[in-house]
Amino acid sequence: MGDYGIKISKSGEDVMTTEDKNLVYSSGFDTMKLFERKSGTSVGGANVTLSHPLNYKAAYMAYRKPSGQFYYQYCAVRGEMKATEVVFSNLNAGDEISCLIFYNPANVGITDYTKVKTGDYGVKASQSNEDVFTAAENKLSMSSQYSTLQIRNIYEQLGPASDGTITINHNYGYIPAFLAEIETTIGGRTGYVQMPRADEVGFGAALLECRSRLNDIKIVSYGGGGVPGLDASSDMTRIILFTEALE
Image 1: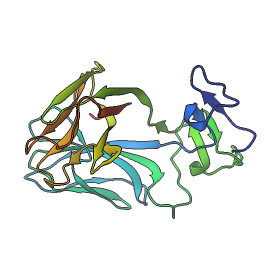
Image 2 (image 1 turned 180 degrees about the vertical axis):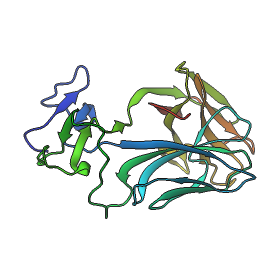
Image 3 (image 1 turned 45 degrees about the vertical axis):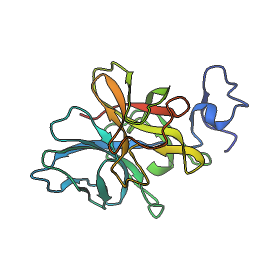
């Protein structure tokens, strides 16, 4: 990182000496710039196709609301991002998709991307060694022309046990986008596994999933006798909740 730019450290951290992980913001890094949230419903189990005008394969986060339910699951569908659309398959009739599409390209071959400007005012911060007045959009660390994916809260909680449920109340009054993972031991190795997790033996018969709802988050272990190997006394669930709503 260059010797100029913007850095903001967490409370209690010296911004001049702290590690990057303790920075709330640094213009030395790119940020996830949100283009739009798009949604669609599967008719009769057909694919859901959401178009976008970016003309390149963009990064995205997808969530599914199962038909007749009131919660969203992360990565619970098969998605294919294309240059002008993203297609979701393996759906049931009535399943709803909520998809966050970002300006950030999903492949390194894209060297530039732009956005139609909404005004001649705002705030920009360029990445290190870039002139903020002339830098391409993808060389800006932050621009008020874009929405960014902001973390509203992070929760940690032990559990759940096999065939168990834990509930974390957030009381936002809306269904937030999220990422969820569990620190657990699989095959003698301890690591972080992102949800949903299908049991390696059951091939999907046993699942561990996160369900984002109006005022709470539920972590559910179910099917086939639960997810083998879960230990509610030591496995730690970590959930990142974002400010972005899913509907």
